[in-house]
Image (spheres, rainbow, N blue to C red):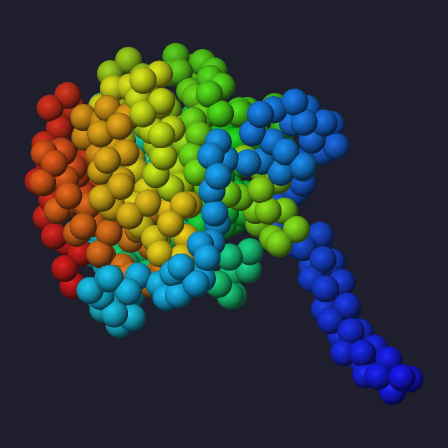
Length: 375
């Protein structure tokens, strides 16, 4: 018996030391972010989308499907592992700052789910993940694709002053420590879902520059109407903070254009509710990549993204959550090809600009996609 106890002790001690070291690292390294204060958690207790110390989706949502139900990922996909990353540097467009800084409403895609928007002469950033690695560490993690030009290297320095940053949730491919710290002095205000202010405050963002919202809450900001809307997803920057902060999408209503940003999330009835309350929209930015049969509830396939655009009343849609990182087992350019096919069949106006290209948001926006992703 003593021998068995000794063996168990020898096996348990290294594991205990590893866990203690991991917890210490998470507490010390700022990139892991912060935790909502006790006072915040107390106020969350009254919310319908918060239970047992965690935020919850409106409907039952699995982060992972039953492995017996879906034993392998994306078997129906025609692409193999060789297509998961681009075969050559992705052609990107040098940013035209004259267009960005004009008084025209516009959007500039920065890859994945990051956008620079000009709405009513306000400069807005959505999910500005601008670093080369999606990870708490610069030396390890999922690397960004190689681009034909390194347009992100000095992007923050070249940007005009930013009126507001909008964060959809705190996953590393959407909320980036390095980007937020670097742009702090350039940004007037940050809009985040409940709980996410803890990350920004730890990173040196003054509390008065942050507005937290729950689903369906809205506010006015410099003449814009801003609202956080539901999505079917999750949150967390380490195993101990899963779902302790909220996730969602953003509605931004200007004088000339109504914008909807879906954030990450699976398909659901919430899209029709968003359309009924805030639609129609002139442009929708819809997540529709990094999908897998093993997590069908928390990401959409492209065909669902097109349906989501129809549900919210989108006049023109753009697919996002691709063009930067490989996070799932499908070809890197499969999402846009599937979305274009579905949009064409359902007579949905869809745009697919290059990364870095500025699109003017005219009332009759027509931009036939050019297949720049065919490498």
